[in-house]
Every structure is written in C-alpha cells, then in structure tokens.
Picture 1 (tube, rainbow, N blue to C red):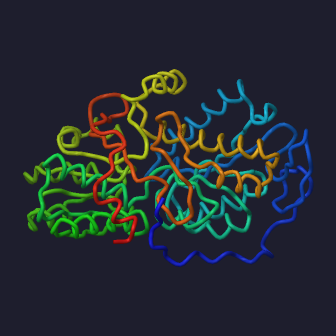
Picture 2: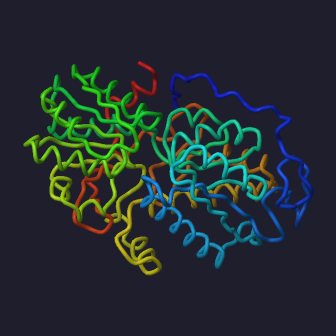
Length: 413
C-alpha cells in the first residue's frame, strides 16, 4: 500500500523513562519476562489472565460513542472468554478509564494503567492519542485508537481501524459527486474542530476541491462550541452547495437545524464521529435524515443484524455505530494476540511484532479491510451511510466506497 507524505515522526521519550519489570507480574513494563507453557509472557499477564486497557470518553462530547465502544468490547471478550481463549489458555480482562475527552486527564490515566496492561484496545480522541505516542513507543504499547488522524499511522505501536480522516472526507465528497449531489466548480463549506480531527478532514476536503475546481469556505470551531448559527450563516452567504463537518454530534445537529431554518437545503457530509442516533429524536432529526451523509470505517447495523440483536439483548436501547467499531477493534486485538501466541511471544515486544505481521486484516464485514503499514492509511475504503430512522440511525448506501481521488492523495499527487 502506498504511503502518505509523512510529517516529522514524533520524538520518542528517553529509554530511561521505561519502567522496571519482574517476571509475569502486572507491575512491570521492561523486557524481563518468564515462560508459561512455552509462551514468553511479561507485563499485563497474571496467571491465565491478560489485561488490556481502554482510555475512553464516558462523560464528554463523545460519551455516547465511548459508552457503546466500551460495552461492545466488554461483550466481545465475555463471549471470547467462554469459547476460544487466547493460546487456548488466557482470558482477557479490561481496565477501563474515563477521560471525558480531556487530553491531560487521558495522559494522566495512561500513567495509572500502563504497568498493568499488555496493550490498549481503545483510546478515544486524536489529541490524547497524539500526546501519548512517545509513551506508547517507550512502553512498546500496542494501541487501537478510536481516532483516525494521519499522524497516528506514523507510529509502529498504533493500529488504526479504518481510513484516516483525510481519506474518509475524500470518500464522502466523492460519493456526493458521483451521485450528482454536488458538481465540478461548486463551493463547499467546512466546519471543523481545532486539532488533528478537524485538520485531517479539512485536508481531505481541500484536496478534493483542488481536483474538481471547487472552493472551500472554512469555519473553525472549538470542541465546546454549541450554536452553529454564525458558521451556517456565513456558509449560506458564500453560496455553498454542501457542508462538510469534522465536529462532534451536538454540533452536527446544530448545523442541520440552523441550515433548515435558514432554507439552506444542501447535503451535509461528515467523518465518522460526527453522528449519534439520538440526534434523530431532537428538533434536527428531519433535517439530518434529509441531508446527512457519513463516511464510516464500519458497517451500519442493516449489514449486521445479528450483532445488533446480541448487543441489544445485553444493552437495551438505540446504539450508535460505536458498537460495530468496538467489536471490530476488539477483534483486531484478538487477532494480534492470537498471532503473538502463535509466535510464542506475548510480551509487549512480541505483541508489537505480531501486529506488524498480520498482513491484510479482515473482521468479518465489521470494518473495511485493513493493513497496518507505518505511514500509510490502513484503508482506502469507507462505508457511506445516511441518517435514517432505523436501529443505529444509519442506512448503508455504499459498501467499501473508494473515491477516484483517493489514490492520488495517498500518492501525494
């Protein structure tokens, strides 16, 4: 797979910051190990239990997503532990911490669990993931982010489940162009968070616009901003034919509602974290159903009815696609651990090596196909869905969609 033009690789922290280890104790993080039944083990393994971590958002702007990712992963491992255990021996437990989408808190919480976990199956938030990369590198900590920033692909410790924000946005806009929802030369508005999430989506929309003679009108916001009236008013005045979003679900609802109130009836497209099904029960629900399109690394529930049924049996209610992502991420972690077991090395170094040896990773249709090559988007494809009054609030309109412009972007053209 071709690679992106890379930014400077984040500097590693000094090896002196690596913590001392002892045998198979969960209190260690260096190279001291022991052998159990022919498998080398170390940090994060106690007896026949492997502990994996999660740094999630249960109380911040992505709380709905974080709750469903966490519950889905808990359900996945409960089921896995009852059946085919890792190495036929090890059950998996989770150490879950809520950072509330606060970067500093997320970094502090990592320090509280890093000596006790073998790997991390979920870290929500590009800023938190980026801030932790030096420590992930020093600790040989494989991490699956619930974030899709291009910079994350530059670390050998990171396994991004899906296309990067740039590729997702190119796919979303490419779908609109293919369907005749926008045309060559149009003006597109883009409302985006400050930081890598927003910057990545903006880079995608900017690249796409350059290929098609389009203009992008930028509107940057903070994660805490709630009312999008000023931004939508500006975009309407500029004559936009579509609105691109890399924001949180609350802002998405505000954009759709304000646009409808102002008579700005244009497609709204977003990167995968922009939507939560609970939005459809609010005053913007009808506008979202009419206009919202989302590029996603995972399939909607209409493709996965059995997963929806099993999840709702344990967690009643209307779930987000965090359920699908959480299940896919847990399955990727299981494949990494199985490969490490096959190699006879369940140490942090062994788990890192196993991730790099997986090749193309399939998750049974949960997520797009993945390849974990350093510096490359793990996928060039996205599921495209529309907001709909169905379980999960999403209806698939295109499977594994790849815009004609993605190859050029990945090649740096």
